Length: 158
Image 1 (cartoon, rainbow, N blue to C red):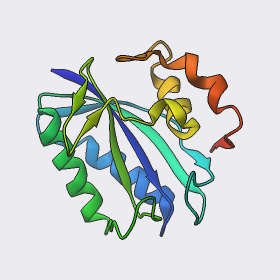
Image 2 (cartoon, rainbow, N blue to C red):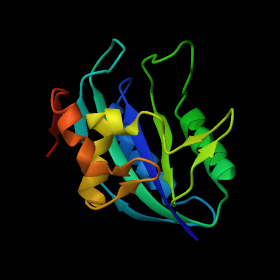
Image 3 (cartoon, helix red, strand yellow):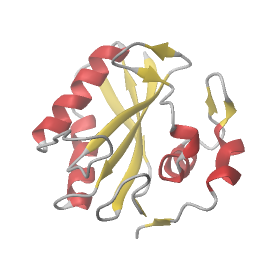
Image 4 (cartoon, rainbow, N blue to C red):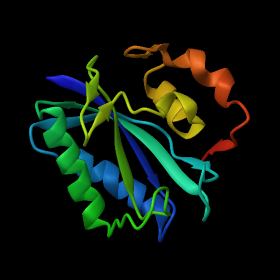
């Protein structure tokens, strides 16, 4: 069994409902269980335009291999009408496999740890909410990267 952390974001349609539905669907993945989820956060798009994002991070325990988990995440995105017309396009739902145990994976389809997770407040804040002492394999404690994202606006939703 592996602990995996999944970043969740949406800024098209009913973004809040899409994020909440993604959490529900993560809890229904085969051979997996939703163990924790962060609060919802509102953030401005980074390196993109469009409406603000609703973001969260989920922790699951899973027996699924990393690439099968990624495929399951893509199926959840597709169920929400996710399209990928260009890099950083607005999206109905985005699910990123941030961490998969202590593994470091580099394939054409999957990079774990997610290559920008330590550069994004919308990932670090919810991740550290549910795993305050987590380390990023190959990089060290996630909390050490908070000062580097302090200029990125983020707000926890009620």
